Image (cartoon, one colour):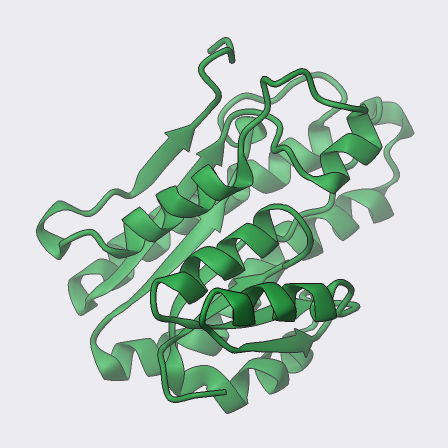
Amino acid sequence: MTDRPVTLIAGIGEGLGASLATTFAGAGYDVAGLSRSGRSAATIEAQVRAAGGSYRPLTADLGVEAEVAAAVAPLAARIEVVVHTAHRLVVKPFADTAPAEFEAVWRTGLLGAVHVARAVLPAMLARGHGTIVLAGATASVRAGARFAAFASTKFALRGLAQSLAREYGPAGIHVAHLVLDGLIDEPQTAARFGPGDGGRMDPGAVAAACLGLVRQHPSAWTQELDLRPSTEKF
């Protein structure tokens, strides 16, 4: 990698993750993608290089602090932006959702964010600036039936973002929570819900909004930004 600042994308994959990577690469960042498997790394690396940046895939189980810390440590001094998108979606009746499934959703979507924040904050604090964006969902603010595991995790992630923003904002760290109120047009969505009808969120537009958060002046920081398609009911 070069000596440019680094954007770390936790939970990177095709779709939104790849769009975040290319958007930030085009804005002058190198990119590190953190995931459990490293899947799609070659494709994303080619896209990042085409956008003018370099890419490093990092592999770790987000639910294991030691793995996250070891993966992030070599780049920690250069990581100026973190976007945490990792999640595990379980949609089941509450009575059919096993405690182990609740824990798996929580470990990926919340505990993983805790581990990533702990890994990057010391260097950000020493530098005096940095941005952490935690990506939520409709379920961050409105829990639907059969979404008990997912919504309880997303509610908690929103609380984490608020607490970190209040604690670290005065030290120059911008912590923002992103409510994605709609389905993102990406392969994972199509695999679960089928082809879209044009009413899904464009991942490039979401990535551009994240870049906008990073570029905000500290006198006018957004703590929570909600995005949705124009056709979404709310």
